[in-house]
Image 1 (tube, rainbow, N blue to C red):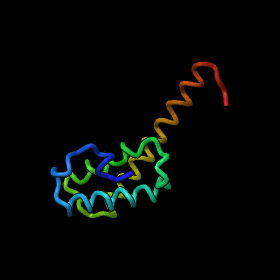
Image 2 (cartoon, helix red, strand yellow):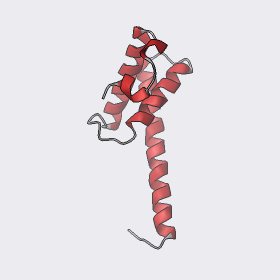
Image 3 (tube, one colour):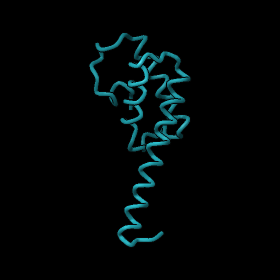
Image 4 (cartoon, helix red, strand yellow):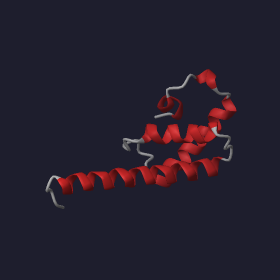
Amino acid sequence: MSFEVLTSVSKDAYSKVNWHIMASAYEQATFMLDASDGQNQNTGRLAREVMRLFNNGKRDVGLIASLAADRERTMGFSAEILQQTSRTRSGVRE
């Protein structure tokens, strides 16, 4: 799925160069996360994080990709911990 589709933002909101920077950073971040198959349910969240970093002034593709991938790893880890805590409280053990 293309980066532009994942963001739900009008194509006219950014120049072609800016879209290219964000799309390249997104592709690198998915590679870092091994999520390029599109099966990752959080691809939209990753795309929004790339856009947020770009909107905050980041322009280096590698930096945006690294920061977005790190954030996604943190979010995934946090969700996993919450899920485990919920299971433990309900008496379900792994």
